[in-house]
Length: 188
Image (cartoon, rainbow, N blue to C red):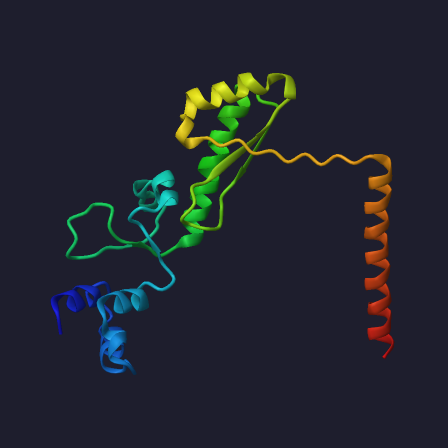
């Protein structure tokens, strides 16, 4: 047994789990340190370099009663695994709502917050505003959050009358076809 394997197994104090992972491994490669670590922390969120943890802060997660599995051999304060991903998600949502209320209080017409499900992506805030204030809004966001933390995306769909009728017709035909299939399936 190598020191790296011992360190990986030290992530848990459950001796039965340690024995099972070591002695019941069907293949030798399952005893590799990264495999042992993954088996012990399979449902947990790694703290290191996690933007959602950085946004919420580990101190806030601890204060809310969340459990952090710490690596006994790490000197890094931000090393470990978060056991309660739902609590982390809730804390991020709450923090985003606070930020959104601050932005809304500054006079913005509409603010929407959303925490992305992929933990590798940072959370985002969507803002809707009148087109006349576009440049003012863009410059404000750049000043407040920095160009490296802001992105602009827009999607506008416009139809001429014939195109609108054609798309509506396609949708209605699709609905009718699925309705007909459902009737055939239920009638036997």
